[in-house]
Image 1 (cartoon, helix red, strand yellow):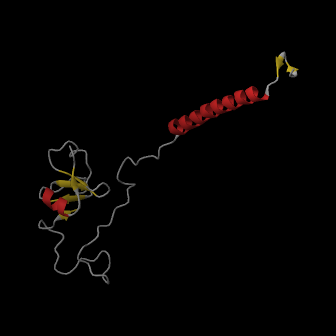
Image 2 (cartoon, one colour; image 1 turned 120 degrees about the vertical axis):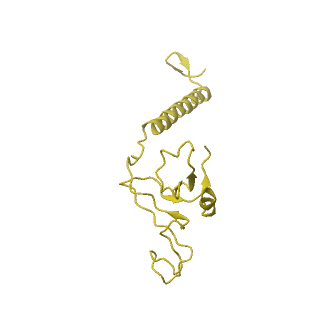
Image 3 (cartoon, one colour; image 1 turned 60 degrees about the vertical axis):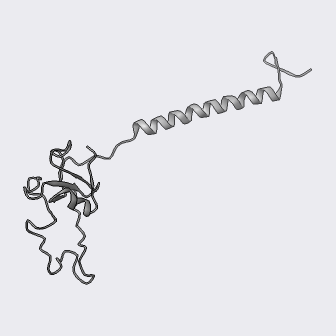
Length: 143
């Protein structure tokens, strides 16, 4: 007859399986709690409220020669007038009347007048029309 401990016979197979099952259950519960703590207690990075903290992105010139300075304008290109394919936004964050299409460099999306997010979009570039923005590598907003 097997030795008794606490009024029960000691059977190593059944007892060890019971502790293994309890260990797996406890491990699963601890893992789930840890995962939920990571998901719900993670702190989000603060988003800048205004464009004052955003660093400006320097546009790449396609026709620039390698020995030219990065901010130099190649000869023969007039990038400041109404004939330019894109312009920088005005000081108040709006686009000039001649270039109404708003484009964001970070997402490569452009917004046309009358679109859902057109009024709340702060542009990085202003284009003459949608075709010019698409030719420069942007895609239209879905809404």
